[in-house]
Image (cartoon, rainbow, N blue to C red):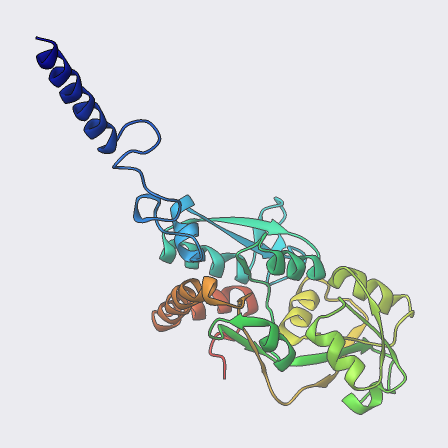
Length: 281
């Protein structure tokens, strides 16, 4: 009798141990580690993360017409705003716009606060070393803008020893410095023109379409284009370098190519600039 009870106890113990091995406390047979297929596998893939949360964060200045600015009702509008929205539609996500000063936007892109910076960013060799760029979606020439009375600046070489103003680290500030100008840092285009009108600077460099847009809204402004570059610079969307952004860059390139192919970029360009600058060369 005692032997039967002992055997029964041993059998019960074995059954308990077997059940525990199949999934008791401390580990379920259905549990998945972080980053596994059950959790979406989005770690290290920015596009998957964006699509997982249904939102992409796009940084821009909001003060640089007609690329990105506020209309009379204080709505954020512009070529880059609508291009960003079209990209968001292609990716199947909502676009969250964040506005700020130029240098802060680049810093936010570097730190991962922003997914994209869509702000008429010109492509140059220095930036290509730090960022991966989308395919170009616009092209424009650089204008040296002066007061109407200025007859001293007729070429880029005439910037030597002159005072200019631009947002620091912008392409235009770099061009001015490369030609010997002393550059004063400003926050936006309006501050630049205020310095020019007051005589505190000799000139400013900017893209020609921004000048034409300013003159459209300020036809009596006492300024002119003194020099216009021969070659157009390409405009593209910078992203952080690395494997994490590869699929996002590919998706953005595909979206831009489709928007160029179906004429959307041409339509938006003519809407905001009056000419088609979308066919980057």
